[in-house]
Length: 186
Image (cartoon, one colour):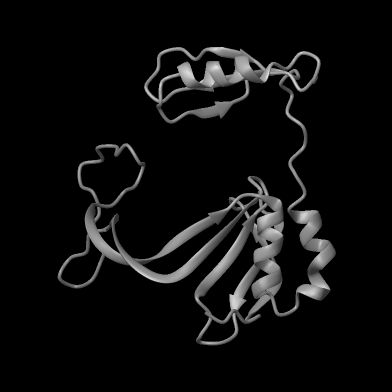
C-alpha cells in the first residue's frame, strides 16, 4: 500500500461550547485518502482518526410525523435526557473511528499523512506534549477491576535499589486475568 501525504493540517477548536480549546485537525485533499477526518483532543491528548470504513450503529434520533416535523412530548412528563421530543432507535451508517494515544505515534501518523507537516512540526509537538504530572504521590497507584467493589492499592517504585523483578513477576502471575483500568488513588 502506498502512503501519500494527502491531508491538510489546520487549526481548530475542540470542547463543549464556551470551553473550546485550540487544537488541530486534518482533512483529506484527495479521494484516495483512507481517512475522512482527524482531530486532536487536547484535553485527553488523543488523536481521533475517522476512516472511510463504514459500519452500522444504532442511535437515538428524533421521531418525525408524516409531514417531517419532530413529534413533541405531550403532558409535560420529564424525560431522563431532558429532551422535549420523542425519540426512536435507528440503525445508521457511520464511519469507523480509531484513537492514537502515544505522543510519538501521533507525531508519526501526522508526519505520514500531513502535507504541510513541515510548517506544523513544532506546533504539533506542543499539542501532543505529555499531560501535566498527576497529583498522585509517586509510587501510589490504584488498580480498579471492572465490577469490583473495592480496588487494591499497589506500591510502585522506580528506585532500582528497591525493585525486585522476580517478586514483581510473581505478583503479576498470581493476579486474576481480568481487564484492569489504572486510575489515580484519591
